[in-house]
Structure formats: structure tokens, C-alpha cells
Length: 113
Image (cartoon, rainbow, N blue to C red; front, top):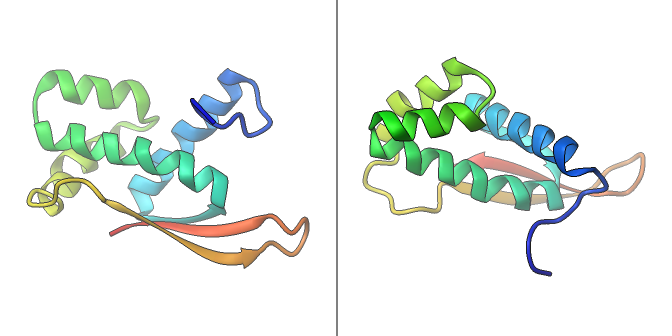
């Protein structure tokens, strides 16, 4: 399937949800969500960390345009970029944890490696 998964939402709702989930993942380092959402979050989070590794004003402004909280953007540029300085991609890991009790949706844990 080319492009992104729609996740049962309109474009603006989907982008707002994904921006918030990427922000929470970068802030806490780990989160529990559905497998399909985790697969959508991973490349966006990796792009934000790659922007953090550039360490220039243009990259910082691009990250601020996507990340919803300024303190998380600052953490990405100050802490996470140093942590992943010698790593060329692959900053996230998705681990399946089984079905959710309420609706049997396949759940996963996405975390920063």
C-alpha cells in the first residue's frame, strides 16, 4: 500500500495524533500503542532524531514545526542527538505484546534503542 495508513481518521486528525505520539515517544523514550500506529510513528521519530543530529537552526525549526512541545525539541537536540551520534538510523524498536483485552487490537511497545 503506497503512502501512509489512514488509521480511520481524517488527514488533520491523523497528523495531530501522530505528532503528539512522536512527541510523547521522544519525551518518555517508550510507549504502548497498536502495531499499525507504531509502524507509522517509527519513521517520524527517526526523522526528528536525524534532524537533531544536524544541530543547525534550520533543522531545529523543522523539528519545532512537527514536535508539539519546545522542551522535547530541546531534549532531542541536546540529549538524544548525543546518544545516537555514532548510529546511522535504527533508533526505534517495535515489540509486539499481544492483543488488547477490549477490542483484540494487536498491541506493541515502541521504544528508543
